[in-house]
Image 1: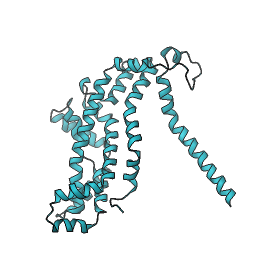
Image 2: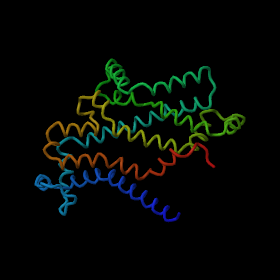
Image 3: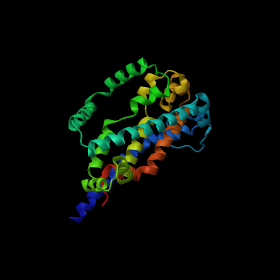
Image 4: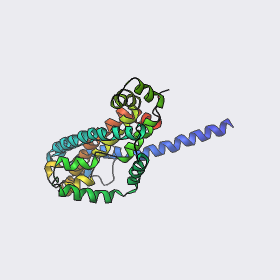
Length: 278
């Protein structure tokens, strides 16, 4: 019995190791290509899985070929403002659906959930027409407004808020605590792991945003990093100098990788745990 258990354990670890290699290899290949010189990369008839002469010239060339620094700044502004405004919207909404009693609450929440069934392509078409009619194309407002709320995040936060015992809310109301103060002093601190998870997921979503920015902006002054990658490909630089293009992709991917490494425990905690502390 023990031998069978050990064999099963070994097989599981082998399968997990193979899966990990399959997942990590594309990132390794991207990083490896980014530190190869243009000449050595093009002279390889058979791809080499390591290099003895790494170079960082590709990273400098990636920043000079396109205005990558400006794209980083635009993406940072877009990400910070969008995430901040989204929190201002979804936290009170989740609190209202979880704690307040008002006529038609269940119907309104059901309609909210029904919005998740609408394909994103239809929403993009509607948003595009609305933003165009408002004259907000090629503006940060046009980039940000369609992304300031999320039905899924409201639902996720509502479920966490509802796990906080009602007795806490009733006791706070007896003491004369306002709903806003109760939200800020009790509910948000208790559900902090979930809120941090939502923030991180929203940051990743904003950083990787491609379709909407590409659709609503044609002015380079408002391009995000995802648009920068497409511009690198379209202007011929990316097709000609693959190592420099990979260097640009590494630079763009690095903030998200660092963010995940730093907050990976918070992400897991926010997804797996409930809203109460025990």
